[in-house]
Length: 115
Length: 113
Image 1: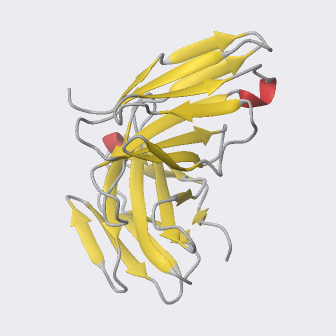
Image 2: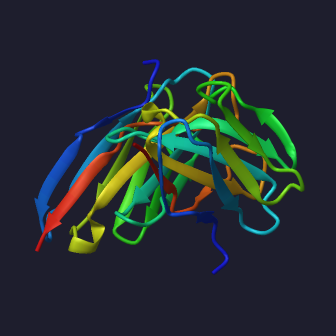
Image 3: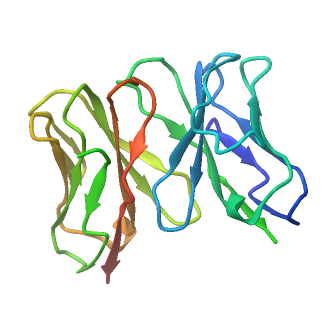
């Protein structure tokens, strides 16, 4: 389909390992967002890209979190030296415009479990 | 209100019942209010994006209203069906950001056949 695709769907890692989560947005979508969703909570904003430019990374919890979108399409969220508190669902969303009137289209998410 | 708050946290209804949920959000520097439906093992699906005070939107049996002056939105489901079972999330755009969605914790709806 033409929706937002995330991989992997599930990731189990040992504490201290590095992980990389991938997001394929809808083709042509300018804006791309990453969210973190803890159990029982709503998604929390991590970072925002407009094309290849990372305009806001204020939600990244620590300098262990890094996101990139080098060609303005696919994005990768990398977490270094994972900790147990990083266990969450990571959602990616894209939208066609930059304005507030556009809905965000979400992927299925990556469920990350840190042992 | 500094955060987005949703109530109730969960709701169990019988098939055919009509129901509604509440979303409260900061009313200052308001841009938009989004509603999403999130079914288990699927991706959140956009239901409505509302921007104007007094807005009413409808999609099938689901409708929503918006009051930006007092900072609340209601989501209504008429004649609930088991397939309506999902978590309903609202998210506010406002303050110093026109793109950063602030989500509530959601209302989990279970419709019993």
